[in-house]
Image 1 (cartoon, rainbow, N blue to C red):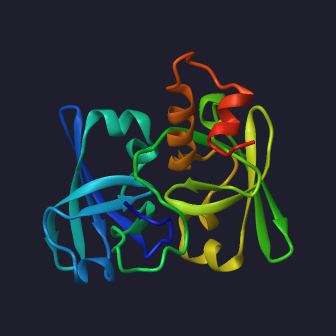
Image 2 (image 1 turned 180 degrees about the vertical axis):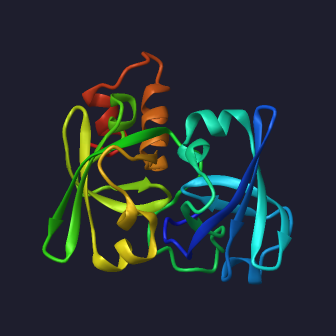
Length: 212
């Protein structure tokens, strides 16, 4: 599990295709100081496993499914990536619970200066937006962000200057793809509510579980 608080902005050193898989090498300094082979690492919001660690960079294998369902397949040498090590149970959770299992790839439709901050509109499928609520949390390329507004086809976020400087969002433009993970708590709540005998959400069921 991760928190969506990015620890380091890494850089792709190289990517080697091996059949349907990819061997990804990423330059990093901070996170590899305490990392070991076999550790999980969140790269642009995608949970990968460290397959090798060398001075100044680490390696991770990327499966065909991950290449297909995230934006990692579009990475090339020199691409910047958001990096986060797994959370410790003793740590403060500054963001929200992020699993590193990407739900979809969204597309940036608007990027607008908002004072010193930047406003984004990101298009996403309805099956992901259903778990998104106003002022709720969402992970965009692994960054824990707050939803400012929602429509049936997209949602808005605003990033502060610090986030623009230390994550990939400051370098993103209109048309770029980003990995999206909806709040996992919303998925569990829906699953619990839909598991009742009648298979549907009713006012009585919501009252029973304290949601209405």
